[in-house]
Image: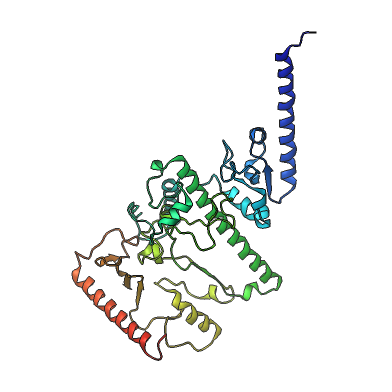
Amino acid sequence: MKINFFHENKRAFQRWHQRIFEDAALFKGRLAEDKSRNFIFAAHVATQYLLAAGLPADRLSGVLDNNPDKVGRRLYGHRLWVSPPTKMDASQLTDEGYRVAVYDARYDAGWDQVRKERWQRQQTLGLPRNADLAPVELDLGPPYDFPEALEILGPGEVNRPAPWSTLTDDQQAFQATKMAIHAAMIDRMDREIGRVIDQLKTMKAYENTLIVFLSDNGASAEIMVRADGHDPKAAPGSAATYLCLGPGWSTTCNTPFRKHKTWVHEGGIATPFIARWPTTVEKRPTIDRPSHVIDLVPTILDLAGIEKPTRPGIGLFETPKASRELWWMHEGNRAIRRGDWKLVAVKDKPWELYDLSKDRAETKDIAGEKPDKAAELAKQWDSLWEGFQKDAQSPKGG
């Protein structure tokens, strides 16, 4: 009997094709029922067909495969990373990998577009006041030079906030993944804070607990690999990797300000601050003046009815008796602020002067227009720095 191989192969393909769609529907249903985190095995064409047939990629944490040539790469045509089963620890299998996957495609548009969107949203919210969007400082890279880190991290890493369109496909994919990891970290932090709040509510202590949330500095442009190392073949965001935002995403995270952590321009020192204590804080007047982290201890002591130390810091609910100066010196970068006037300088660079009531993002240096004001603040900064050094060297200093 003559066999018609064309028709036989066609029917075989049709059966296989039908099975793929049936499996995709089955797996999709199980994913809808099972809220735990799931991986798919392995990185081959059947997996691609399942995803094409409707298996939701956004509910998968990644792809597991034993083939070392596939590990550390993306599944072709998709945004899922391939990881080795032996390298996946329990936390990756249940949570972190999933969280990264949730944000995986969110940042594919790149830091230029995301920065534009954030600025538009800030304008809608009226935050911050008296600010224009500072230009991207294309030549400003990480504050520290670690060439070995760039070598370890590979060709996807970039150490300048270059226009997104100038990056290679590999660089764009790597950078988008880094921001997805950062977003997943914030997501995880938010949920863990929620657990603390839930516990306070269970203890019936929520309404009478002061909750304070703030950041210690602006976003960081650092690119480094710490002592515990970075495995480029491990799942991005896992315990075996070490990834930093870098200057591209740091510029976006600091919208609309200039510079980053380590510098003392607004991008390095302006931070969010949220406080909640319904029985006490929310009955106090709105605070609308420059403050510093050194004001936290006096504020808490004030709220607790405990005598405050003489320095440093001023309670946030106190009325300052006189004009107050805030000043900074960090790794050679220096600044002083009095009212709306701010004098600031990068290490070994001239002073810059800004009127923050009109230019919160420090886009127009007016030191040349107001040399007397710049000189006055520079003299005061020198005096404060000299006094600090004397205090630090005295037996009672510290």
